[in-house]
Length: 430
Ligand code: PLP
Image 1 (cartoon, rainbow, N blue to C red):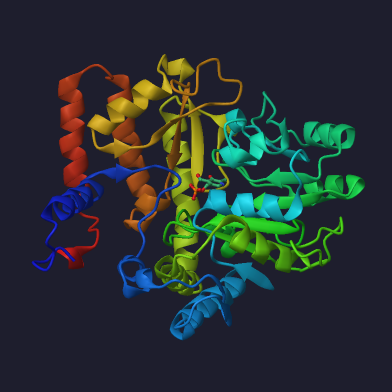
Image 2 (image 1 turned 90 degrees about the horizontal axis):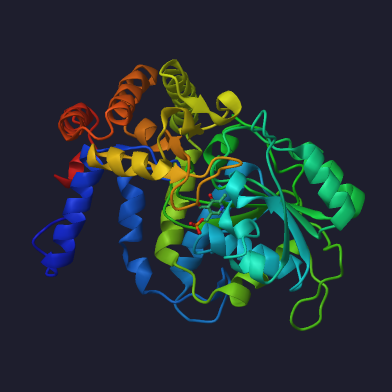
């Protein structure tokens, strides 16, 4: 990988440095993971050379016979992972997947209802800064102040009063499971579609470790690079295809089923040529998810998250909703007199990587924030177990309690680097 064939040493030296950074540090960013080496190899393959606009068997370019096999394999494996009847593996990212769903289902100005960004939601669920909030009329529900749990009563109230065309569930910084059945019941009262964006917990849902959104939500989107542990990318899935409820038509004026509309929305609606090297890597990742080894991984992620939550609570940290059902937790640092920004920047110096995060009802700006988000998917992939969570929590607490003490921070950095030596990352790369 880092061999003499590489001529652009400037870039490859930087990639080597990035590998070293990943090896030596503790990665707690909840949306990150370490893919297998074969996933990385597929992304660095000759499939990057190929144009393949269209879908398997219906391409706008010649020479797609092998690419067709790769993409079909990715689709079939993904359908198996989630017991879906239809899947599109072409979205370049989670944001692209969501945009394509909106393009398929909505007209500009239509109302959508999603979890507020400041309460743990995602930018693409109607933030004014994102296309979802600029082209559509975005409404938001939140979490309850006393419990940190999604306020389903508020969701219902807004839905009944405003009658959005689509209700979006899923989040980026929410540590609890979702009541998909409740959301669907609300949507059915107003004839709305439900889209579940399972980008964060998808790998746990795939293994039956969390509630299954597929029977309740009309459309499910995800990224492939978080708990699914694949390459960076997006996917869209249906368990049950259906006639679209508003007689939406394709660009030629034909009424289509939802799967056909979604395919058209991804290409040619929102994207051009698919990234077939990434789709090859997605196929590999989906194959890995189907193994028993990945079932064990999913269980370890949940066990580690709970152990980490307990270790942080024992050290006096306030967790939003007081715990976690999934792979992450959100910590309110106000009782420690710290901002998220300061915590993130200082932990970085000790080679512990996580992100500052707004907490619900935060009084600080999104650039400062009162919280941090901790996720365990990446350290679980490194091979850590519940006992290691105690050590990691100890490192974090040591830095945060001595936030301006450079010597302590340098000491923790050395301890972190030594600790991480027992969890080799891509040893094949030398
Ligand atoms: N949806 C959710 C819930 C996310 O958390 C994210 C990424 O963090 C996305 C969508 C967007 O994914 P991407 O960064 O691949 O566009």
